[in-house]
Image (tube, rainbow, N blue to C red; front, side, top):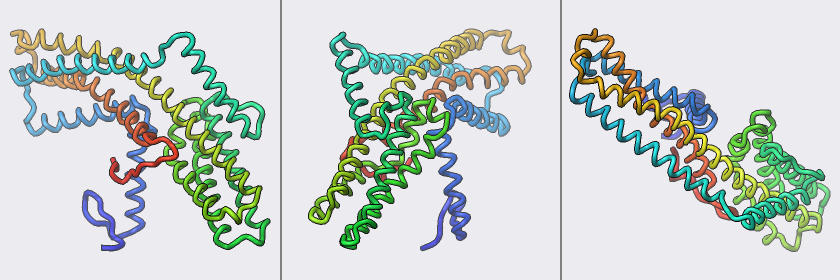
Length: 345
């Protein structure tokens, strides 16, 4: 039925309430997957697991004394976490291996980076481009917004233009400036300038591929109607879009490398003590002295042991959520674009 929205509890007839619910869900999703501190997300996951175990305890579905099922469960966690830590560290080393190379290879990489920086500076309105990722993308988008505005002004300065061309240029300039406003608002903060992920997150919703297509389409359809100034602005906007996409892809590569290295170190700091605690729990689990302890002490120790077992998996899940989202949103390379309709999670 038109005008009705649905939640897990059923239909919502009030459009305002539906919009508020959708906005809240989007905000929770964005914090969990993108914006939230990874350790806070980990704590939230472990808190949810602890809450579920407490519910099982309340409804008397949680063992209150040592037994074979819990012993087998802890044994499985001991072997599973060991495999998990080993695999993640191996993947991390594979990523690091791409950073290794001979002096000639390393020199070529540096020269390519310098050449790219020089190309960007040639289209910027300032002599020296910033070195921080957030400031670098901010300047590029500000320059892009200025050129989009100048392109829009050319339609008012040329009264002889066809209505179709004026409308097309106005819509294109509006889309460009809309993206620029969204990105500059996200980038114009100290956090986005200091953290490389802030630069990536600010550009996740932009659509350079579609804008490149619109540029080429307008140039082709109105080839005889475009002025020299408009052609120059079209070329300048195209260069800015390409530079922005290259910068975003490069910063994504750097971010993934840094994030994986941090994930591996965190897994070692958390996983090794967790493995020792799990092994110690298994070593004393069947001792006769354990049965003499109060039931509350046994239940508390079991809960602590289980949460400890889940800790490495929760850390991995919190980091992979963001890494996979960044990879999904940046999978294609301009001028191609992939539909997101099949990937709604």
